[in-house]
Image (cartoon, rainbow, N blue to C red; front, side, top):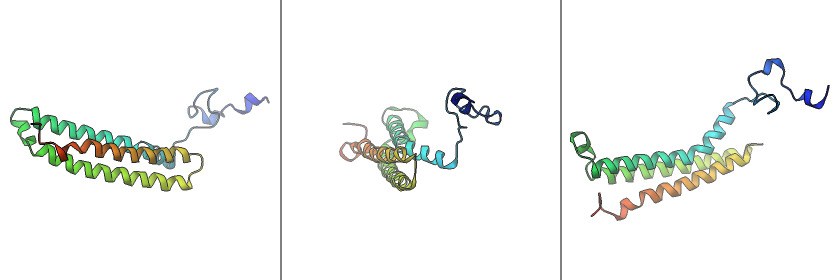
Length: 142
């Protein structure tokens, strides 16, 4: 048996590898690996959700017309920005802490978790930066 033959998947592993010349072991998504990827992506996803929500509410409240959009009239955009900024920043900090704690006990996924913690901290900073104009500017401009 050659070295190449030892790396081929067994018939029971068919369909669970990355290819005949790819990863020789079956690719398994465990709850631990799903949690790792969730913690890795949490900060950017929280920031994105915050940005989209704040933008859409401000856009609807400041430029939208019609009976359905009157519920977004000022001061709703500012209040929405305040509340979502606090909630999103706290969520980013919580996920950063969870990723950091998980990284201490992780083996080969340690760097992914540390990167996730850093991304969550950066997410918290960007959430605050997106929310800051609401503290200094009036609703919907001058």
